[in-house]
Image 1 (tube, rainbow, N blue to C red):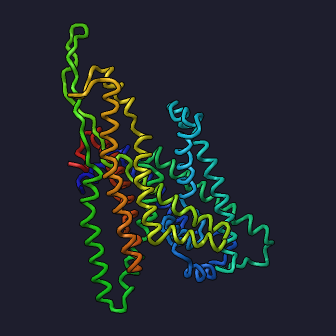
Image 2 (image 1 turned 90 degrees about the vertical axis):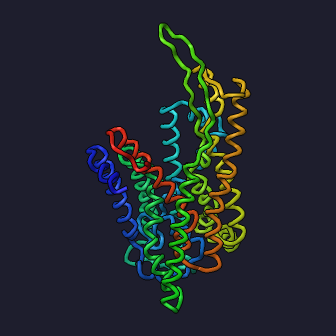
Image 3 (image 1 turned 60 degrees about the vertical axis):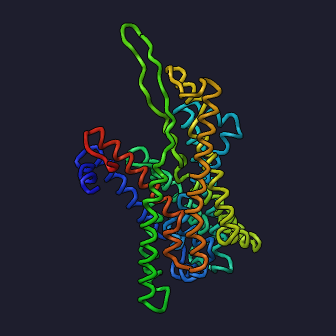
Length: 426
């Protein structure tokens, strides 16, 4: 591993991408500590300590920016929510579905609409937080030396601008850095909360020795689960494909055997992120309207048995949904037929399409159930222990961190192999 990292920095192009990515992530973390102008920071920090579970989970995905009421308080959630909406619209609105099939031109249209939708959702969230933090629950009072309307406009504009800036940074990482920018921003937000969660776990018990022992035990369990998660993340079901020999000019073509690699978890961490956004949407609405029954619904959907059931159902659903979006059995079967290939024992055409689709469905179910259990079980343990380290190192956080790390390492490895260096996966 260490030698691969050294090799990565030996390649000038890759070194620039890695340093650029680290610089953007450092800038993002800096923004999490820059407070919004006009907010009395100390009074707000004191009031925020009594916030509910829903707000704590939203704060986790912003890397502590929300509890600081910083310029990045909205985090990446408006963009993720907009992306989910656009993904769903591809199957509902024919025009959006055609854009997805038009290649780069269509993707640019979808990206542009996603950006506008992100700003719209960010504006709604910003107004919601402004109203929430001025309510009796928090009691934030603005300075009378500045006109009230000007302070409100400044706060809302700063929060929306922060969301736009995060979106811009994520796209910069994707285009000029290493890995997926939005995923890396979520990754660094979760990782940044781990040190404080470790200290909180140690001091949770009055007996310091017991707190240290419990914290070490949690870390050992997490480390033991990582190889299992990596094994499932990289597991494949390989469908064999044979190509018949044919003569093209004076050369003999085909005759080789290969396979179609179908990943057990083809959707990666996307189902986890999508399910989290759906379940925490009521919390964002509660922040906007601050209605009693809506706060109850938000708390129920972010903790307790209702959250556990919905988490499992939504993760399995999005595992199937996203897999169907990124893998097309008809297109794969057609490509095999055009190249003179066939799956042994399966007739070309519709039978091949049905075989690939059925195989994909069978392996997606256990993959979806596995990541759902990994996400839910630590949440249940946290519910009964109230240990912040379990929340920060919960199943959702672990899956996101491992998934993003594997994806980033794979992209670095492909760059290394282009320059004849060994990669991370040997």
